Length: 74
Image (tube, rainbow, N blue to C red):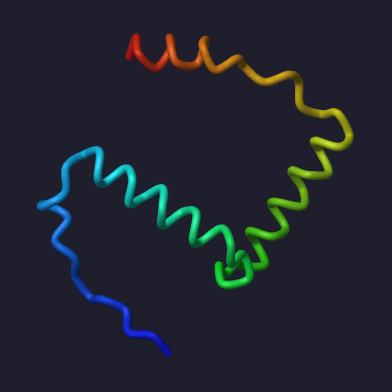
């Protein structure tokens, strides 16, 4: 088993470095989906949403540009 660091001083990282680190962590985590625990309730919700999507119960999404404009106006 590998050792996990218990603390890391993120204050030494620039915002860009924090984003890069988050991207790298996400990329690593998504290559091991079985290592991410999902509760029975979460699985049930995901399956319910998938069923609704496949049944056409969701309309088209909002284009990113519209979402971005709305968020920037907050």
